[in-house]
Length: 219
Image (tube, rainbow, N blue to C red; front, side, top):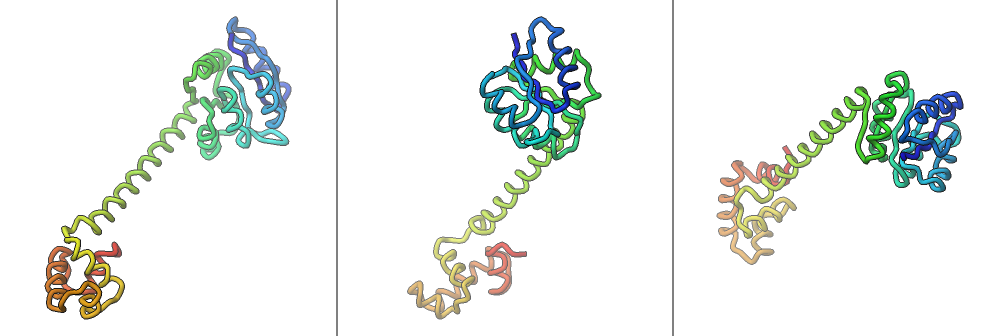
């Protein structure tokens, strides 16, 4: 038997949902809550298998408590709000499903409850679109981050500079002259000039300024 807690500030909606759910032999409603704060205390006491959660409620809305409820039960959001930010926020908060009022019938609600109770997900077409878009955006951000990191590694490590040449470039980037670099690294100025010639070739630049710009990653 799947035990369900209904969380909605509208008593008529709660009554309708209770009627739909109790028409099934494998679902029972163990409690109702009119706001988010009551929902948390009820969920802690009842430990239902599924919580049907509305968003727009007094005292504490659905988004503010979904994380707490998701730690206690499987959450299926039932609300009239289909804003992208809300859908994404509820799913990030731990909700396993999201349905929009007016876009599902009793049969779909029961299928969703059974799926969520089993640990599966259930999304309305609108929710699924938002989820796919969010995943694509996340993948694009991760790829962009990876590309930037690879670029930095290439600039700092992939130019083929030797350890000594890297030391020279670090001092050059800090504004030191050839003489100062030679003193710090215990080299002759001629050796420093030879290192710089090799560095310019590897960085594919023609002067000190271009070398510093390329080395520090500024374009």
